[in-house]
Length: 87
Image 1 (cartoon, rainbow, N blue to C red):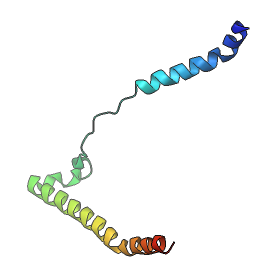
Image 2: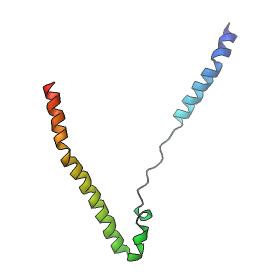
Image 3: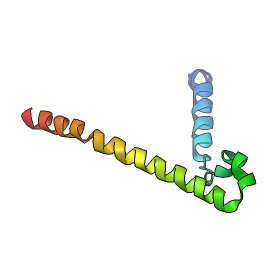
């Protein structure tokens, strides 16, 4: 009887064991910073100072966009808060 159960559940146990070993061997790679020269490489012929200026302007525009989106959607947060309070 034991041999029958082992033959039925053997592949399932082997599959679960392989999944467990693969999950335990997972690792997260080291983070790498975003290399903006891959995207702004066309402006390299202007010089390093202009490249820094363009990169800074794009970064500040992105930050401004995020702040703008948060400010415009704050009314949505207040409506949701009032809805929860009403409930």
